[in-house]
Amino acid sequence: MVLRKELLREFIKENDLTTTKEIQNALKEVFTITLQEMLEAELDDHLGYSKYDYKNKETKNSRNGNSSKRVISDLGELEIAVPRDRYGDLNRRLLKSIKLMYQA
Image (cartoon, rainbow, N blue to C red; front, side):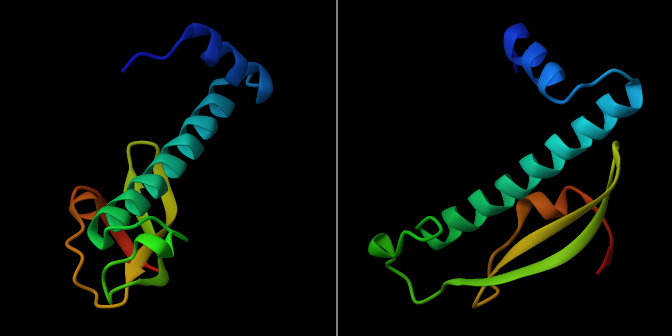
């Protein structure tokens, strides 16, 4: 993965990152957001349509809120909202690759 230096410098400036702790917290937030988006994309793929795109919905299955989970990563403990489907038949590949601490 290539991150353009200009984009990275802009991120540092916009978030006023000056200490290693601030950098770690920013990376943790970026990781959490990325993880959330990946979970949403996994559900989109499973259902065959994206959130709010009811015109292309060709299944009786649908989104059914989310479950709050705490996970452990190399960046520390994270709180994520795992989107659910009504039938509960989604085989979550991503969640199997991370360590769940407990359900909140």
